[in-house]
Amino acid sequence: MAQTKLRWLRRLVKAALWTGVVLVVLAAAGKWWIGPALVRWQVNRRVAGFWDGTVGIGRVDIIPGQPLELSDVVLCDRQGRAWLRARRVTVSPDNLLSSRPVVRGLRAGIVEVIVHCDDGVCRPPLLNATSDDWAELLDIDGALVSDATLTIRNDGKVVSQASVGLAVYTREVGLGPQLSLLGSVGTFDFTNLKAEGFVAGENSIELGRLTGRLGGGRVIVSGRADRDPNGQWRATGRVVAARVDLQQLHLRITGGKQGIVTGMLDFRLDSPDPNDLTGEGMAFIEGADLSGAPLAAALLGSAGLEKSDGLCNADGDALFHFRGATFTLDQARLSLPLAAVDIEPGATINVSTGQIDAVAVVVLFERVRDILRGLPLVGLMVDLTERFSRLRVRGLWQDDENIQITPAAISDVTGRTRQFLTDAARGRKRLGRGILDVLGMADGNSSPTSQPASGLSTRPATGSADKSGK
Image (cartoon, rainbow, N blue to C red; front, side, top):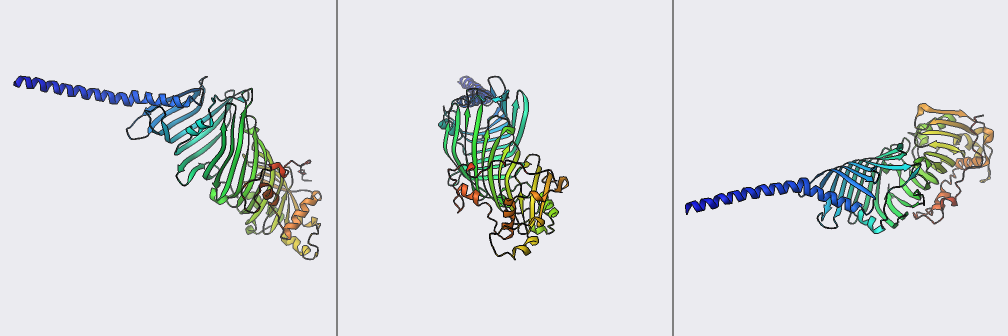
């Protein structure tokens, strides 16, 4: 009897040991083989509805109760070219083992998006996903992307690169979707985001209206992209900003840290090269502080202004068109407490390099008000030629050591410029009214009208400003 009990005890111990071994093997298999294989299968299954290609995942780390950790994620097309690389990705899923798992949170670090073009034509292998498919893909509670880079390649060669240090998307009940972007220019915190009229098809993607709050003001974005028979994508769009406070954006631009901005920009892109981006727009700024802007200080100093506090509380407006990073001013005016400036049409500014080439006409109010006080007619335009300064400006607008200012011929000052400077000296600035009227924002209404930007002409002047300096 005792021997029988001993044999059963030995069998029980062996069974327990083998059970433990099996459980360990199953746990290891679940963590190192079965679980990662399931994750890879689910990721490829979901992406297959949007992308004609594959997803490679170098490593999958599964810890019960914790988000999934993915390393070396690569999204490739059928040719094996990588369109997306992510060094590390953290995914917080729900119902991972079900047929339709849901991603609730996503974090990605050291990310590169690569756009491949052949002979200038970009054909991303996107499949015919519906708007509902896209909405389901983007239906997450939060996402964070750090150290992101966008690279555009044409025939294998890098055409351009851009980077974003940090992008954070969150969605909370009662607050609505929020998006924060941190880059080399500044910080942009969008709140109360709302998308309307989003339609995705095989050959087109349209966003009827994306609205949000930014810097205490309102931003509205609309646009669409279409694919032609050759597979080339072309995009058009419009961005409207109403009373955005620059101080809340923490811009890293000298002289651009204060002011309330309202404006509109229409753009068109017919190729993946950002240098082919074209468009036109208008802008109005109130209460800007230019005391830290080297160009403003040098320009008004050359005109004879010695008081540095005269660069505070500036208002200005501008009409412009652009190609790539080069903006051409069709009209630009600036009114300060002690002076007014008119930038002649044809001035160019490269926002990437900071290079500027312009002709500016400046009047200091203390030089002309003795004349204006003796004139009884309010609307009389006075010839103040001897009191004007017409200056040619060239160089880097944020570098006081690389700004060249030379006198230009005063005889070429137009009647429009004289009228503006005279009105400014009289205290009648009237800046931004045409822009606000076009946008339908004159009385605090931040909804843009249906009238396009061309309603207030932004066409280039028929003759460029005289920049000979003669």
